[in-house]
Length: 400
Ligand code: PLP
Image (cartoon, rainbow, N blue to C red; front, side, top):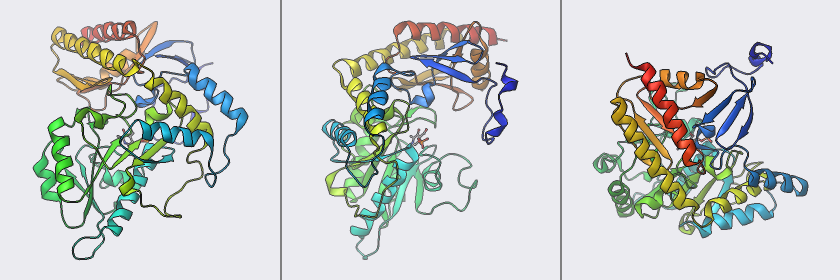
């Protein structure tokens, strides 16, 4: 079928998309409407942690869909209980609230923090509700999540913003100290800023932030929508710095590609009362059954070590590419990595890589001088080599 035959204009225009319609996915590979194959280093924006359509997800969906799809969140169901237990058993958190998207999980975190700040007032007897977040952070696209985000231009696009969010500078503890007031209830950050350009919060900064927040009786919230569920080589990114946050949000990897997200908290903070929070689809058995299949795969012996090993391999390969093509280096944790290009050639590379024939390469450039790599966590070493060869060819072609 020709692209022009698809009635794409029935979809609301929200972004520029290439004239491709993807019809099939398998592991690291996508196939378009013409049958052309692409090596996919986006993986649904770091969502498909086990690649496209892994067998364990197909099986979980097929089995659960025959048993029970949604009894309503007013009742318990087996998969959501089992997945919550898997998450609490393997983290420092005690309670889980399931949601459908990262932004919704973050909204839950804001609400829980504000509720806690109402119950734990300041010395003047006032509610605490201010949340400190960071420049260049990304927390999602609801109005509150946009207000929390430090993305340029987002303060005016749907003004007025939700009030109470203040932006500090990542890896600068003094900038956080300056923003703490007697109304501050929480500090929230991504352990690695993903959309901001794969910028890790340093171990010292994370530890300093934990000490500072404890000293001021302020909650520490980690947004692990992108770093969570194995992406950094640890199950959760906060584990890289050996700290214990109070609240964590998950999205993307937790569902391996299906809409599933979660907010986790420690018992001391679990202060919602009936009516405070909910959602029709939250914790439905179809999605949480998939979440169990994904989590069990990530927790199998050796899996997370293999993510670390492949992350190190990808890092070394990107460094070699840097030397060969005179680029500006690489950074990241595990299999969330960025190549610093040294000039604004990212969008050109993305287009040329996609257009390669007979096989294309899908890359992401969150900033014009950067490429971000978010392969499936079970990517093979051959698929890393193949990507590096293809990218190297594109870079050679771009040379003046
Ligand atoms: N938080 C982080 C760190 C993210 O990277 C994203 C999405 O990229 C979100 C929140 C929003 O997640 P969602 O698009 O599922 O709402």
